[in-house]
Image 1 (cartoon, rainbow, N blue to C red):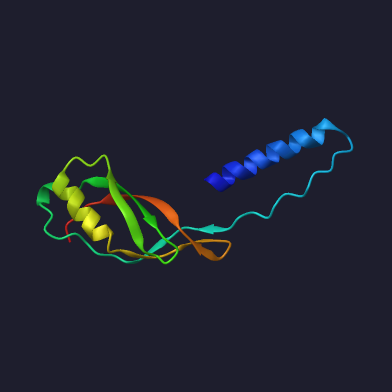
Image 2 (cartoon, helix red, strand yellow; image 1 turned 135 degrees about the vertical axis):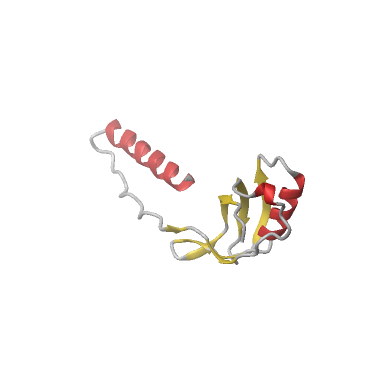
Length: 119
């Protein structure tokens, strides 16, 4: 998202500079950034969730580092402390194929909606 905003801002700035004078040279646009989102490689499911949570969808925010490790797990608008603790514990153990920017592994922030179903 930041990259797109930067590219748009750079394109607008380039347009303003090019219209300032007929002799202004504008550098060619940078190559587009290729971004690949992180993908789950190993999932750990929470244990002992009460049936009352079945069917709920919970938004979880976390960071996946360049090695595929999860950190900073938190539930967005968590209403139940037991559910939050159980999901944070399980999600902290997930492993990911890291995000890639132009082929290089990078850290990425993730917002993931999880639907709780009985297994």
